[in-house]
Image (tube, rainbow, N blue to C red; front, side):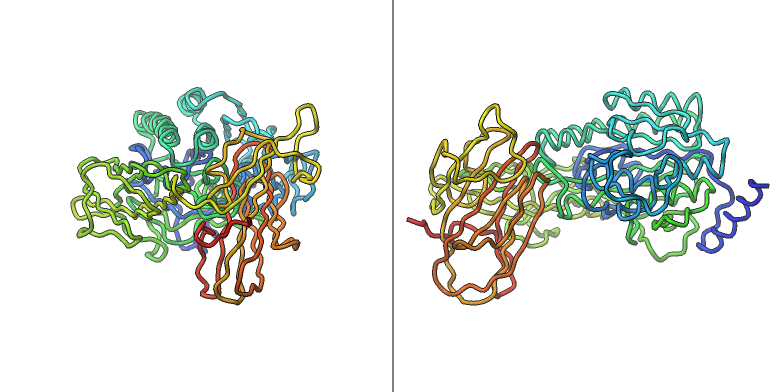
Length: 538
């Protein structure tokens, strides 16, 4: 009786959604690559994922949830809703230690997931979860899955997942790969090491594709590849598009070929799409929707025909750099593609400068590049390089401190009045690029004067990983303290013509580190606060 009711309900749902699903697919495979950004796919060497794009549907503008940390985003992906509903707001979340209760409670006191809903509506379904980050194991009820394997490394993880597909053919196979995130934290997002990690993930995805090919199972299998978040510098968790946007690719039974999805895609839509494909009704508390625009029979409304060409990669990645010059290299996965570029921030076209060999920039520059090949053109790759040359003015005083050995670690800004600086000096701007420092547990206090040439209302933007504080005179304007990822706080202030003393206090707890200060003036244009706007306090 339950099975009959389920089939009838699924039929009604498919009619209401406007896409006919003749029967549930036999297997849905979700491969989640931790820390994989859209640029990682588009600019990296990723032939396997390019095959998914060419033979399936995709978006480079899907979005995760805030905070852009792993646990909240993996939970949203499998739970069909955001942190506001499922209550998982950080990597420290545990079932027995939580401040936000889920809006609906299923087994074990957890918010309903695609795993629990598939088990509830199809008790005989086979569900396998293979994950390379032990933290993922905290997010789901192990009693509702047949296999929950905590593996070590991408090769072992994919080998176990392939074993499950070949010998057990689960209805739902979820695979988590962790090493791309590790490369981002270790060397930085969009560095050569990061792209090498993306290639390693792409090779593992290719192994799964090969197994599906050999089994001739594409007429009954759907493969989804996506991510939890991107990154900036060596960290994530903040509020930037580079951290929020994720790639989303789907291929297989009933999926359209070479279709770019233009409608909004959120990470919690992944659970809903898997449920739809498996014939499982949406849980009433899920806020996501199945991505029907990816289906072959979808009405033309939320997608466009794609003629995908991988975008150029710019090496090294753009950043604030303490150097007199930077050697720039451009490349594309398809070596036969022509690459054009601009150095003035304008959009490149076929008539722009053609890349032939590495070139040197010696001043702050925005580079934009596009690939062209056989009537196709790629997305634009853009990077900005702010160069602090050795001959740049140094109008900022700084004092450098380290947490005393044997005492409690700093998890917030220290009381600078009680500390003695280990080192003092001057630097061009308020930031970390030119200051020698250790890896963790240090603090810096910057002092300078901001020159205002036009009285009016200004907006100051202070972004840091970890904590920071901005004072003008003795007044605290922005308090961005605490141990956290790259978070930006902004505040509006009226400033008169003249010079205003600025003090910025910063500390690094552990993990990634960054500090950026920007200003928006009466002209409503946001600019990095550079040395040409600053005056030495002495």
